[in-house]
Image (cartoon, rainbow, N blue to C red; front, side, top):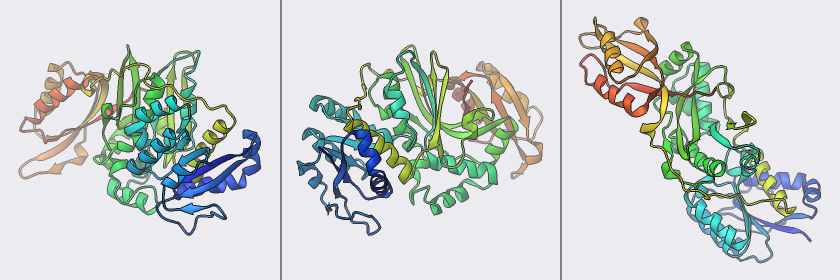
Length: 427
């Protein structure tokens, strides 16, 4: 008896899936112990380049809901509205769903997973985070002899490509973004990626799996890379760091912090060496130390391979629905998070200014690990010289740092705003 599969969407991932399913049909059927057949495709429009052969096609997604011969539906249309309606309708009809849609999971995942549990049908989503990297499968095991203490990752290829180009080629953010768009790594409107929301949605899913809490996208602190400059990257390099866009989830005493932002990463850490559109995730575990996963975070074949992993697991009876939401989420506010910081301060070139900076930081209990006054980078203003002062602090609670920065920015000799970038301890 075969497994009949319907596909929603005809984009890059769907076309990659059709190709892999066709070229590996015998192998996939052997793994599943039964034939796997794509018997219907629906998409909002037909793409001439898609190789559908004799597979029935329509532009009505409801055809996938109403086809009682389908055993599974694979949702690859993206977005939240139509995808949510399709997934929910299929689950309510008792039909399993595989999705690569992190947006719909971040927004509606708790509800959809509950429906899947009630209907005793699978809702699988390996492809929703980090493309071809099997991080969902790893977290679903819950590491029976371990527990996960923290997650740190580069999970947006667009941001990573831009920061790599800025670092290696010295190009400005705008130029690196334009190249990413030309290469198809960034959308015409790149806000979702470079603003951090894509990574935030993925982190909310990873945290839910790792710590058995609900998916709560609104609790993720989110900051993008739009304000990172060549000077920031160069100064960080002089201190021995690379700047990466990181997603971080950490649990301490049942309180979980979830944050996405640019960060200084020590150059000897694996994440500092993950470049271009590659993704990487590190897990800190109790008994096996740090586990590292790297690979392509996007692309038709990479993401389709994760879809197929879910497909064969479901077809062979090996798939286990992940447990999410067993414990309530207690989220740590960003102001309560402790970190070291990189500060870039534009200060007037006058005697006593540097001393004033140190005194104000010290009054808030903030000690300076390193400080460099960039005399060679003098910027002339109307009647004075402004010199970049670059500081690395020791660990400080962010709320205290922000209070000190407000005080510094009130000084006549300090230009506002002061740039701050968190330093992430990945020891």
